[in-house]
Picture 1: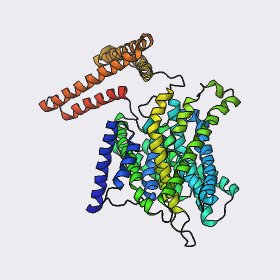
Picture 2: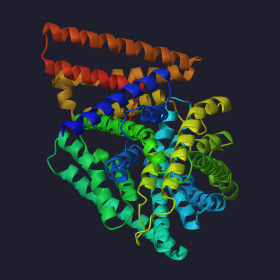
Picture 3: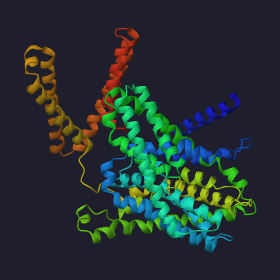
Picture 4: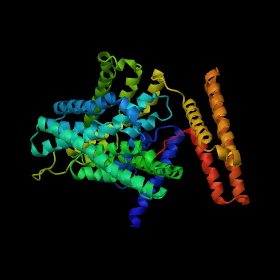
Length: 536
């Protein structure tokens, strides 16, 4: 046990150190980890890693999808459902078809069924890679919403294509009509299983006497239960997790009513997802030697040539598909034309952000070694190697050039959006005004006799006044952005000073540790209002 645990802990430490290096040199950590894993794998004496696809699908995929669904705005998802659907389904199908016919034509020994198998593997982009690369860059909210929404669904459509193509290779029979019907059955029933399971966990959170720790533990268990239940009945586990995650996120305010629960879950999930994301990307790089050993009669140069060809195909198909998706519906529908036009810049960024990731590699590795009749599965090792090349090219080449492309096109916000500070102040004014109304209507007697209630009313009135002044400053200042940046800098400096004072108080034992921790938590919440983060 000790011999197995030590390498795992060592890998975790290496991953964390590499992420810190990536942050220091300002390279998105998925790209850096793949390159680092690739470099480490060629160091003499490093053991060859064999990645079990079941680990990816069962251990990593459910929580990664669930977390992505949780943080997806249902309103934004529904608003851009047309574009998301055309990418997550239409583009996946088109990519699979083109890859199938191109691979059959240019790769010796490739059948059409094997081509569809490869197409289903390499068609879905990776959400984590795109959002991590785009983090901190000036990208329209619409762009992020579409990329995240696409990634939620495209894994399901690609895995279903893979499943039918694999069956065609194994049995030698394929019916388009039957496959189409099965596709909608598998996806639709996956959604039903996900929503039904989410209702069960919703009831547990809502009506049973849970604690913050129990709520966090249940939230981690939920995606695994949804995934395994759907897969048990041969339905889409991906769609079950996505639909369940969207439902649970939408009803989260009813389930988690205390701040302690929500803050606790943020910490648990941020840590879990960060570690999982970092591990899967370095595993991609570490897997290459094992993939190369399995090439057999096909030379590495031939495999690279075929991989570059398929990489070029998936990039071109995505770029050619995205522009009709963005503009043709606007020509047809007057209602769609009411939204601001995406122009040519936004589709270009979405098209270039189609980076492949660990789901594609795990899918390729899940191809069985032997056919049902005991014969070796045809072209298995070549398919896996081509998949690796496609991941490497799209992730590293497109990932490194995407920030540069965004700067070159000078992409600005498309849809009219209020600045975050303005929205926060307006929300605060509305909430404080509601609180004042409740005090005046229901607690008039307490207001006259209770000094604490009087102070609360004055505090609310002062908060409204401060936030209104803040809004006025944003509206009238000619250099409002510079003022806001300076204001944030001052506030963060003050918070840092206050933390140091709390440390001094702790050393001097002036107050209990529990109360000092409460004060630290309040400072953390105040800082998050400025720095911003995802909350679960």
